[in-house]
Length: 96
Image (cartoon, rainbow, N blue to C red; front, side, top):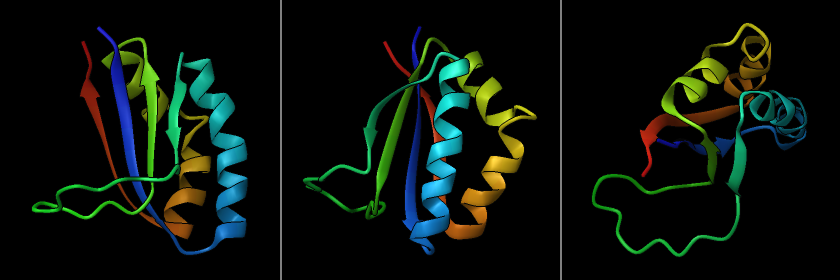
């Protein structure tokens, strides 16, 4: 069953975040990740629980692959670039 890693990001330093994007993508792909949305235009219809800022959606073959990417030693230093230069909400959700 596929899984989606979803991140809502409020970028504080766009230049540093570009470096994060460049480094994160090949690592996600190594774990089977395919970017389905990466900060595109949004049509937000309801905001009772939260107001999204910039959404990234990466599809993985399964939850274990998404978790392995997020928890990997190779992603850890890249994640630090993200967390140092953006505020984020990140979750993994099972797909169909």
